[in-house]
Length: 255
Image 1 (cartoon, rainbow, N blue to C red):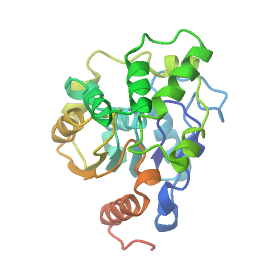
Image 2 (image 1 turned 90 degrees about the vertical axis):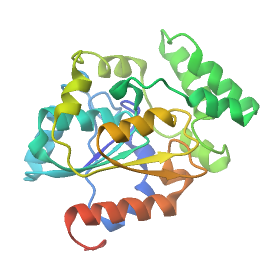
Image 3 (image 1 turned 180 degrees about the vertical axis):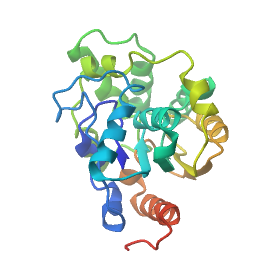
């Protein structure tokens, strides 16, 4: 089961996860607040119930979860609240600092790039929170250039895919218990793999390293890769993800 990020970004930005859908059957949750839904998020902690509801609808007692970015929060809420339903976790470029309190360090990656797009992305990340949709979209457009290791036509086309609204993001972030991180860390941890981009300025490096350690997870770094491995390093990402899911399922890829 695939949990998109954003939060609440149009799920088409996932594409086919570099062909992973050809290796394993994938079911993509369209989260509350995404453009394809009419429901408003109750907050990512509570929205974990939607993952359970989808699994029940499909007759799945347990699921292998593939989650990206903000979707990894939803995955960990599922783990904390419904641990028996999670067989394995594949967490891709996760939102990491909140879990361990490790300070973000993505600014260092952007500063090291020394190019105008990276500078503009850093300024946007450090700017005050947007107050209306037009401001949010402008900030999102500027940050996009810094969220990939490179900013070629391929990355620019991908960045334009998947709408997202400020109201949906605000709703997604509400209603999270103060002890959410503690509940996640206290839950039994299934086999977990974190896939990270070595040049991901959104997730950073130190926060992801601490995040993986806290979850007793394996950690794989992809070089020359930012926040979207299936776009930037598709062959490597597909091989890693397919092998992981095959091991979790106990069957060879493609079966």
